[in-house]
Structure formats: C-alpha cells, structure tokens
Length: 315
Ligand code: UDP
Image (tube, rainbow, N blue to C red; front, top):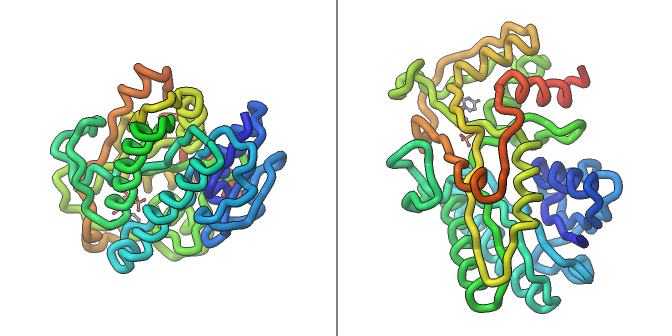
C-alpha cells in the first residue's frame, strides 16, 4: 500500500515507518523536523520536510495516513495550551481536509491514554470515561471526536490507538528528545555519564513501593499494532483500541532493572511528586488482542531496557 507517515522522523513514527518498509509498503514520511531527526527516517522511505497543514504533493496517490506528528509534552501543554490546540487539533483538521480533497480514505491515529485522565478503574478499558487532565490529552481527545464524525459523515476508515509509556528501541531507532522528560531515557543518561543522578518523583503514592506504576510498552510491539490497525480500517467506522504491556512497573523497579542492564550504580534522589502524575496508569489491551489478534511479545522490563540501552550506548 502507498502510505504517508506524518511525524515519521520522530521516535514512534520512525519505528512504524521502518516496519512498514520492511513488509513492503511504499512509505512517504512527512515531518517538519521541529522535534524529529531526518536521519531517523528509515532507508527505503521517501522524506518530505513539511507541515501537516499543507501536505501538498506528499499525499498524491496515498491510500492511507498514519498520523503521529504532534506536540506531546504534558507539562508544556499546560503552559502553552494554544500551541497544543493549534498543532494537534488544528493541524489534524487541516490534514483531514487535505485527505478528503485527495480522496485518501484511511487513517491510523496516534492517540493517547491521556484522553482518559485520572482513571477510576485499572486497567483502563476503552469505554472508561474520557476526562483528560491537561491540554495534551484534551487536544488528542478532540481529534478522536472529529475522526468519529468524519467517519460517519464522509466514510473515512479510522483507527485510534491509545497508549501511555512507550519504551525500548527497534534496531537503531530510539527515543531522542531535545528535552527529555521520560523516565527510562533519563535513567540511562545517568549510566552514560550524561547526568549525575536521576530524580524519583515521589515515594508516598498508594502503590506497593510508594512510587508510581506505569505500563511500559515496547516500541516494536506498539508499531506492530499500527500495521494491524492499518489493515483493520473500515469505511465509515472509527475504532478505538488501547495498547499496553499488561503489567505495571514502578519507578523503583525500572531504575533497578536499568542498574542490572547497564552495570552502573545509577544514584537515585528522592524528590517531590511531579504535579499531575496519577499513582497507577495501566491500559487494558484485551480489545485489540481479541479483535485484531495483537499480542505484546516484549513484555519483560529487562528486554525493554536492554534494547533502549543497546541503541543508546552502541553496546
Ligand atoms: N519519573 C521520575 N523521574 C524522572 C522522570 C519520570 O520519577 O526523571 C516518573 C514520573 O513521575 C512517572 C514515571 O516516572 O511516575 C513515568 O514518567 P514518564 O515521564 O516517563 O512518563 P508519563 O507516565 O508521565 O507519561
């Protein structure tokens, strides 16, 4: 299939683009390189540097779009809400209009489990209430709402995938953010000697060891779900699936595995809670397992950290 991957120079987009190329799809990556890296575009994909609001010829002949291009920092979204609404919702609406103009009828959207907000029940299922607690989650939820309307009105075939903590690496494709806020890359930077220590944001949560529990999904498993979703796009329907590892890991557990994998002592300093962090975030992926036959293969934290470390350190 001829596909367009927006944000394909970023972490998740580049892994999906690489897997699409691997199985024989004809891939164009559209990315403005605001946070992505041109050298993350996989070999075999065509690269167009540009804005999703004006995809132009990048959409010519395309049969499906996999849409990753977005602003994705929760804290920044609280400080600069306009930016998130403009990029994530405004940008996607413009992309959807351009798709309609060029008769592109399938989209797989990189949504987020942040659309649910603070969960009432764990693990989170797809019909849980959607009450995002920040503009990032709200802007992604608004796109999901728009996709449902576009599917109903124009016959678009859409699938949204909702996930939280993505980790690991796929070969050389890894997480590379200018401002790194995520736990695993920050811990590994200590082992690399780029940071003196890692902060543990709160040890007084109602969890077994007092630190937050998250559901870390391996980026290769996550990417595979996008390929299944692409095949599952059906005209006039908008399907939503959660994705997760199935198991939660605490911040302390993650740091301990990073110590084992890297052989570095990794000093950890206990700090205050980070505002807005719920104690436990774990997604149920029963629906996608049942309906699309997806199954996570890399569920052990050791393997997830091991792949991230190999890509980062070259070891
Ligand atoms: N965290 C931490 N120290 C860090 C970065 C993150 O203790 O340097 C914690 C954070 O409070 C959360 C978990 O690690 O409980 C995962 O955070 P991350 O930013 O990786 O992902 P999020 O869950 O916010 O999407």
